[in-house]
View 1 (cartoon, rainbow, N blue to C red):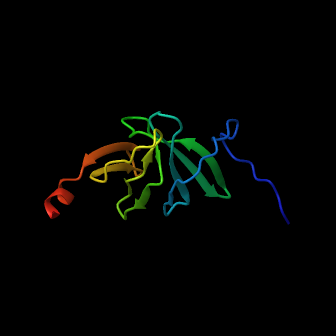
View 2: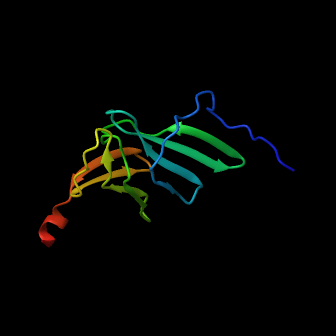
Length: 121
């Protein structure tokens, strides 16, 4: 039987986005890094467990600029790593810039210039 579940915080549905990557953690939360125009990006978190359906905004401290076409990887220790992509103005993101999002307890961003990659070449 089909049914429409109640979803917490659904009074304001997130804007539609395309060419974004998502990751899902062991607790069933989906993380989407999104943005529009030339703004700073934001994290949308969607809870997918039937007993705890919700969507909310993640950390707002020090987010990188919005982009699309990037890669997103969730590590075992709870970091989400974002690399590459295209900024909203059409320019390409620096491949040496690695954006990290801590989804375990801090829910904050950390933008790093990857010195390891520079040392490889």
